[in-house]
Length: 159
Ligand SMILES: [Zn+2]
Image (cartoon, rainbow, N blue to C red; front, side, top):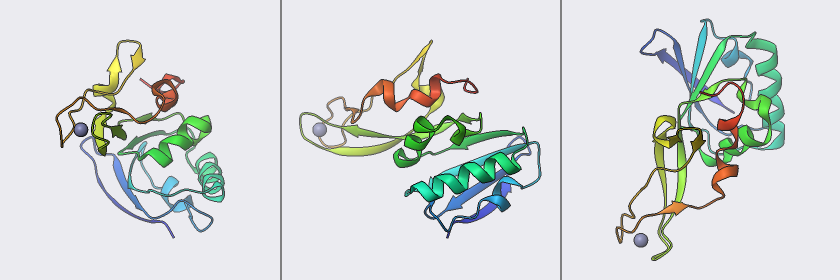
């Protein structure tokens, strides 16, 4: 089951906070059919996804979004992977912020750090902002391929 609660965003848009796995039981019609010219989804509490969930998501998005603007914030790595694999998953919307999996090569520490898309933008390409290791203060690196990790950001519909 995926649950959601709504609140009002800074620009008067509907902000929807989703909680739960994106799986075969996820009913997203009620989410994507919420009123308003713009939908703002907080995905911080969506951490697991399977192929049935992705199918539900894309189908509901196609059916209910109807050309309205959609933006996403606090996207976790398993969900970002879907954005990267399936272009339609994002509904042409921007990702405002995301969790980046960092690795400290010297000491092996791993951390998930929330960064805004603005912090990741370097002119015409995308890169992880410098983050210091909480244990040894060394500069941490992305625990993934940078080009693949930011793939969605290079596509249409992104800033
Ligand atoms: Zn370290």
